[in-house]
Image (tube, rainbow, N blue to C red; front, side):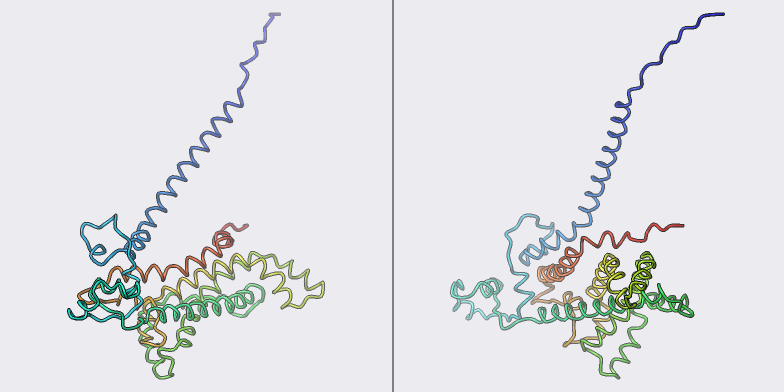
Length: 331
């Protein structure tokens, strides 16, 4: 019988392996973070450039090559918010350096102009707030009720109805603009707030129903059944059980519906003229003496961007969860 000696193997240094794995993970996170920052920077360059142009003078806004360093001015905002006329040489001589004028007229005087009134932009921006806000509210409110019904009740022909609702989003706006224009002319809805709210609500409703149905499908029915057993009515169970759990989906739907109504251009251009005209078709038409007022257009675009940014910022806590909710389903 031969004697064999046992030689223990070298101890495994698990800490080194963990450090290597952890180091690789940290490197991967750092690389992804750098890529995300780079993509965000590239996407925000047009926004930064628009904001810079809004505070440039007219010569700097159209200079070639572009001006990166400049003295900020409110000339673009004055051009956007006021109506002006050209001064004669005699009037310019009488005003002198314009020290007796207010700051807005002093800026206008630099271009040989004087302010004669207020432009229509603020009223058009208010129209956008009214129309987009009301249509978003109604589309989300009706969408929640419709999505709940499709999700919880056995409706005859449910799949066909859902497809019919979704088909509204498949139509390009230009296809239906002329028929809607003729219909609105006959019914007196042309250039009215109610007509635009009704139109935007109908187009947003299909999107709201489909998006919210996915969120409500993820809420277990057992919660409502337990509430009904405890004596709640169907409406009370919907209000106290379903709505609180669907907040993330409602927030995401609100933001997307608001963006569509806020940015919509074709219907606003064709179906309004003065009373209900919104900001999108008005900003590109900002013209001055001798050409396009690029600084004023940039100022209008910047002012138009702020309300959506505020709403998105307020709902940011629910938005990311609302976008990803329901993405992973159980088989």
